[in-house]
Image 1 (spheres, helix red, strand yellow):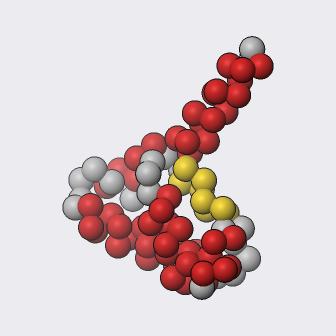
Image 2 (cartoon, one colour):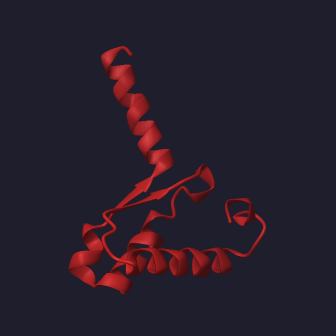
Length: 84
């Protein structure tokens, strides 16, 4: 799907992301969802919404959603602060 992120309409990408997220968290025992490529940057809120839709407000908000780009930037900032 990652290669299709820029080839299909935004609403179709949203539909597929929500569907995949709901399917994943619906299996149970999911503590985190990691958005695996830069093409998914900024999709964390739609994934969060899908978690809440599938699991309910309280449990859905407990699932950690990791945006790989944000995580990478935070890691780089930390490395620069410590001189690494």
